[in-house]
Length: 348
Image (tube, rainbow, N blue to C red; front, side, top):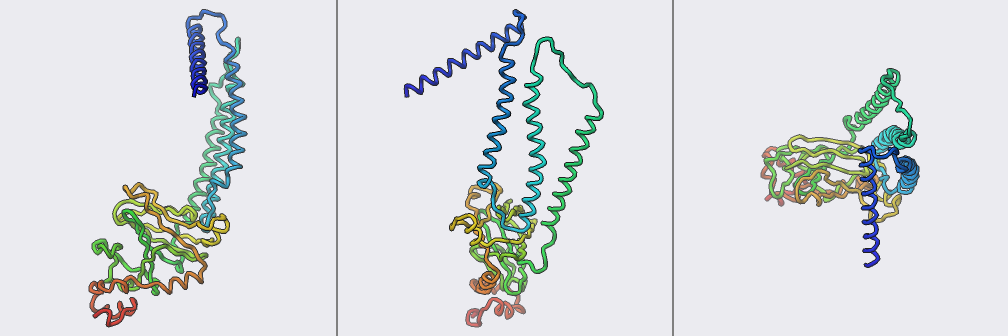
């Protein structure tokens, strides 16, 4: 403890001495009390610029290579590969410009440091130079914007007709997932029908709703297009699945959508990462309230055959909650019983 105190005391004294010396130099310059306008600190500061530049480049390069895998999240969707390619093209172009400009930023103070009897050089006007630094960035930015627009259009175009449809609804503070049943048609919903049991507000006046089901987790087939129909029940939420490069806001009263193709099963990603406990997940990236941190939904990607088997084993929500048959129009009750796999005994 005493040694630490001595070290801190020594550093404090050194800082005070340097500050007093600096103040003395500035006062001397202001009063013109000495012929020497600039001390040796001018050359020292110029040299430190180059030292900082070289050490900074070495450290940044070493750290980027060493920790690349730590910050490079594996991708598990087809459109994620395209998105990553756009990211790295943008990073390469902007990174090269960033490095070059900072090399000049530190080199110029060294090269053009103050020297006695040296006049400053300047260009009052250079039309050719101004055209170059205006036109070249304009061309590069136009390329990046058009490239980004193409990628955006590719990943937001209408989903294929054979896409698996999954509805995901955000509410304080969880996610609710709904799948269409064997008819592959997702039923309608109405916020006025929401209650403690029917949290999604499924509208049973629509016959497509009779065989819809709610699983505990989201299960997706590898290699098939999946369309997410996204909505929010109360406040703004945001669907974020980083490994699929998926992020789309869930907006109350304004349904959104996003489609993608998973290309790695959960088992394959676990093998790739060497982590048997890995799981894909969806998180909320909007500050939606006090329980925001708990909005985590597990996503399981399986082979198509396993997905088909899982899908066929799911029980319609209406079969678990037959009391909601009262909301079904009389002329559709028989169809509802068939699609929900209900018997006459159950209804009675």
